[in-house]
Image (cartoon, rainbow, N blue to C red; front, side, top):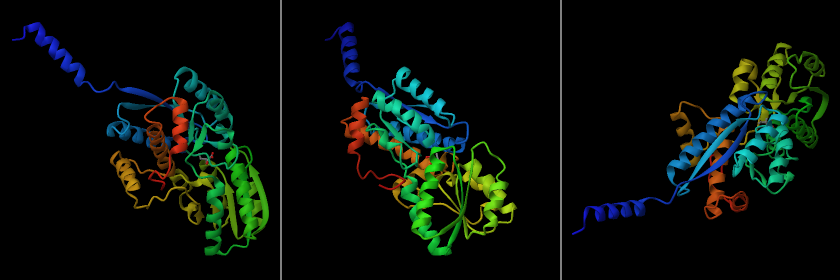
Length: 344
Ligand code: 1QQ
């Protein structure tokens, strides 16, 4: 017979042994544009990241590890991006960073993460140069403009047969400039004659002077490198000026906000994308259904952000469930053929 105390001791002992291994929380910083020129993308990204973290934590795929995502607004600027990175790295001691939304911000903030040896997964940086070449801690799941535009442009030319083009691009942003470089090269390769080139800045709202010049050269196609806000204004104003031809954009156009704001003017606009929303792959279908269950229709930016969290979880797994900054970096190098909504 055991006395009351012994029973209690036994119960306490059973209780201790029955407890799961102690839960370990891993902080992940997400530097997203919630305000500023890239706010339409940041809003989509936040939803994708939160859904993926929720699913991974629920699934027990990382055993006792729980992802805690901290979302902060990078303001679509270099300065705020740097501040957010410093907070993530030094105060929050995050294990990894997702973002920042714009390539412009990444060129300024990522060197800080590289210096502090904190892994970064870029979720929407498409400038071919100046991102992952910052160093071995900087990774990305987004396709670059150089990986998307040449193929999209070629396909468009096959369908539309354009022989001349006019080009308009933002010259105060790393992404819009890099996109322009790729567009220029692609047009050259396809032997499309560039009849005119004009530039603008993010803060501009009236593009009629540039568009009037470009319309006057009578191009077969108008090619534009711009962020979504500028893009919808450019396309609307081009149509108002009577330009009826096709318009080809870069990654900045890959937001439903662009189509919504441009309205009927968006008819005849073409853009290559990193996400095939109609993909029947189980990971994609599961992702879309889970987003819709939350009342949201995902876009490319949601899909990329969601994918990055799964890539991060896979990196942790491949690192033997170790979550140090260096472990995650080493794990990222081992991620291969992971099925995601974007493909493998
Ligand atoms: C970049 C981009 C933007 C258009 C989307 C966030 O691709 O800055 O690289």
